[in-house]
Length: 129
Length: 134
Image (cartoon, rainbow over all chains, first blue to last red; front, side):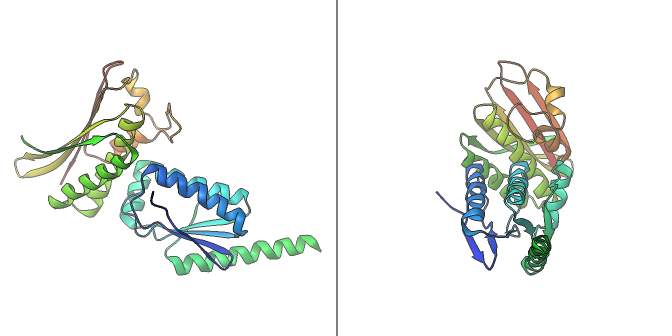
């Protein structure tokens, strides 16, 4: 079976969805990524969807689930690179992607994620004082 | 109105839902549909194909090109011989689901196309047609 690779970059997990995923593959990615957050102690997850030509309600739900699970596991998720025609179609379909942070591209996404990680670490440090 | 049948695609697995997306994309692109129109009908087809697979127990997609004067459109028709839908109005409403989904499938798909037709009877399967005009 195909697998979507998960790369560790600094404190972040980087996932590029490069193929049109069937549903079981999307579910496998959701599980793999959740496990990887715990095993690598990642503080952030960056999902690049710029290669996706469509996002339907199933993939939309997968993205929401990943964001929710990572939040519970003390990591932030950012979805980057969604194409405009994909975004407008998702909205008309009725998928909200609530609770998901987004950025225009990988560079901006990494910037945001690193800032969020720093913020949460400085809050943790304050709490220890 | 002239109707030209292009092909049928079986829907028996979750991989077949991906094939449905690819076939719809190929024909929508071949008839010169804009990227946004292509994306809408592919996404709508993906939602209905999943229903056909998950709730209908599998079925078939029929792809047709329609000609109505100068106007051309793509019609995708999904049919299954599953349990059928007892209350179509309820099934069309957002957030109604008997499965684990978001319940946006039917109502959401309808919003993405120009014409939407559903025929279903309990015990007699379901047939859903979507048309996107170019």
